[in-house]
Length: 458
Image (cartoon, rainbow, N blue to C red):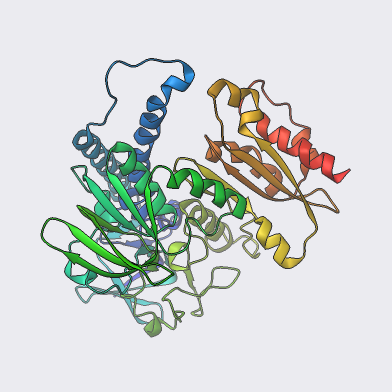
């Protein structure tokens, strides 16, 4: 049995552990069947953004008349070429990671899966076993499939298959209303696919309610949205048919050339045989960890989607860097603080948020004020002819500390970065107002929202 200092299962966020460990001279095993790079690179945020950016650009071109620009002819997409470029870019990046892994001293890549055979012992699919002083589990997640009658007998897509499409579907039924459903529907719909959403309640339920309402109003205006519960799926060889039930009991059937099921994720822990390694899974299959990312097995840690805390690449990057400092480098042990973990939704309109929502503050009885700035009231918004969108700051009434920020509108995911350093430093509106803002540029919206909040505090 081969012995290692460090073993890492998974090459997405797991690379944040494996590469530094090998760089320290620790004998390191990386176990992943490939392709390397995990969900984000191969079937998630990277290929989807390669798809979404052209969609955003195309949508702005179609609205060019608002800026008094004229176009001769229609603006469209060469989707087969875009899909081919997307796959080529992903394969190139995965190839770069593989070459780096293979050329790194002290690092052995097992192109395989692993399960626990005993405490600190991992069994590969061919029966070989390895052991390590410290084991890090970063197996990620996969699309979750609902128990919908008829679904298991039809060629539906998850987000994985949708990003592998070489042709643009004429029509698409999307079951789901979370951020992945919204992002992919935005892209395919902008390119010309007729989108039918089947939504149980509302889009993006985790967002601040004010943001969610504006998003739903704008997004629903561009897509066909059916509010109801899917009951049965069928496929006649060319067209999918989904029967759904309205809340008042009425039934309806929606049809489309393709069917995309995006109803959440499930952790990739089914093959781990975690119990054999002394590791407990919760009722959904996630790995419970404490504030140090330790599992119930001594010397075994878990991070990323398989933990189920935050399902973002930037959150697993934070977790990986924390584990390098506190476990591999032997630094002082301290609880991991995620801070006001930010998120983004790359749709039109774009959304970004961090910290508490207004509903969460009301629930805990926190006294707060709201500072707002409307895109339409800003000089940059005027230049861009932006009619909708806003920045919303939630500020603790007693101290002026920033408790939450929520943005909906153009460049939301870039704008929020101007607020995050102050939030992570536990600062307040006066810290935002000490900054000089370039005029006339979009970040002035941050200043305007801070001014509004400061006025309400006085």
